[in-house]
Amino acid sequence: MTLEDIKAAVDAGQTVHWANTGYVVHKDRLGQYLITYVPNGSCIGLTDQEGQRLNGKEEEFFIARSEDSVENSGSQSRPDGQGRGVAPGGAGAFPLGRQL
View 1 (spheres, rainbow, N blue to C red):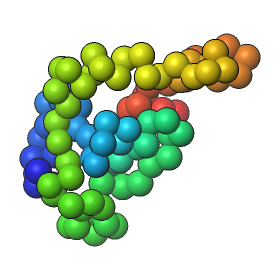
View 2: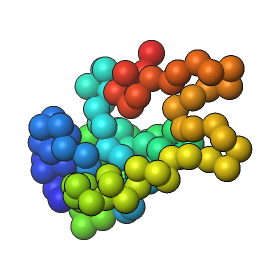
View 3: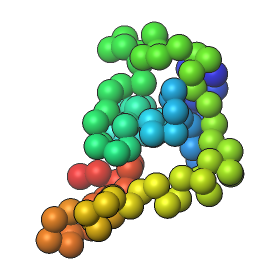
């Protein structure tokens, strides 16, 4: 996918992944496009600082298929019983794109 394809898909509400389904491309509240590694929340910009070069190869980006979300829906549970998105003490975390 080209940079323009990725941005258009994200803006249209589609889930775009990089390399594997653990990485999700999203747009934050400041309008920046980011790549987040969902299991630990680590993220980098979609592009270099000039906004010209992707941080990844075009062929590594893809739009999620509906089967991807079904297959991975249970993969968010952890063996310690803490589900992803729940902070210690039970406080809920903000979903991607709704960070403070």
